[in-house]
Amino acid sequence: MSAPIPVRHIDLRQPEEPAPGPCAAAYNVFWWGELPLGARMACAEEIPFGPGQLHATAVELLAAQLTARDPGLGAPLHATHEGRPVPALTLGLANAFDRPLQRLQVMAEPSTLTAGHISVVICTRDREQALGRCLRSLQHQRSPAGEIVVVDNSATASARAVCAQFPHVIHVHEPRPGLSIARNTGVRAASGEIVAFTDDDVEPHPGWLAEMARAFANAGADAMTGLVLPAELDTPAQQCFQFDMGGFGETFVPVLFDHRFYADTRVHGPQVWKIGAGANMAFRRQAFERAGLFDERLGAGASGCSEDSELWYRLLALGGACLYEPRAVVFHHHRAQWPALKRQMRVYMRGHVSALVAQADRFGDSANLRRIGVQLPRYFARTAVDCMRHGRRARGAILLQEILGWCAGLRYLLRRNWRRARADLPKA
View 1 (cartoon, rainbow, N blue to C red):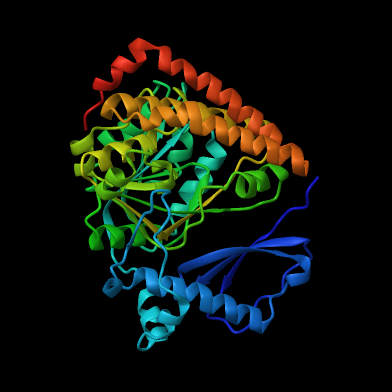
View 2: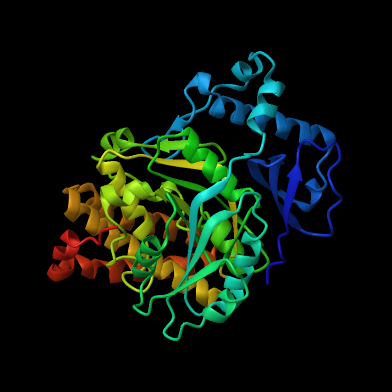
């Protein structure tokens, strides 16, 4: 069994790095105060970091933030066709700025905006312990939410007792199974101008809502997502999800996805899943009025997942914009055991394929179908060859689940009644 990999948070403003405990490797997240800068793996021989290594890391990461966040340089960065930020300016140009450290200090200031206009929606099903942990973390927000709505998707309303421990939490029972149904119930129950979503297996950073409020105040985006960091990497399954599967992405600079991104990438298929994760996202209420609510054919309890990215796709196609802002941070507890991770990856791929079908049907974008029939099989083949060459048995086992999920997703191409239902999007 692999040894646990500690997740270490290092504030580069401090001259001394805290001494680590004994470990074979560590996952290091670098901060400048409350501004996340980047993450690096380090082996035992590299820990603790020396002053020179810390200085070099700080210069590199801070320069990237400076060039990506300065409004005078056109920040935020727009997304490339692969959903990544356009290349930032060179380190030399960053160093040529007038008073770069002072600029960075201003950029790194925590948000002081209130979040009373934000409603937080948490959808849960039979995970009372995780829900309690999530709700306790929300009690420590620097700017509390206007309201917290827990949508209980269990058959027996098992979350009611947990919610009763938190006086300001609104419990809503939605017995119809399905994450999209639960999310839509949460949108209708919420009263905030902005509706934020997180999951019961998440712990938000204390500045999460304040940074969301700042992002919406400074940008005209219809929706936003934020950074999802691992809460722990104690088991082989958690490590596989983070390092082999890419976790929930690790972009540490803001990126704007707008209609231009959609138009420029439509011929290849917009990679909207790069926008972020449903565990850390928010929408203006007008976004639902523009594009409709979540497609209830998609998501956990239905086709599998991708109800979030399909809604982002709709928003972009209709002229809207989504901002990825990594200042809004949450910590996610990855699946700790192999059976749960295997099922998760199988369901993820099945839901991904079904969302591609829905996107192709709704907007006539045939590139979504090419991804199903051409790009995904190529990805499977490349990954299989890599696993065989390097003896990556664990990754091979996950690949098998992805292929099974792809096969299960293919049936949505043949289900005419399912595909006709695209016109029946629920309204806000």
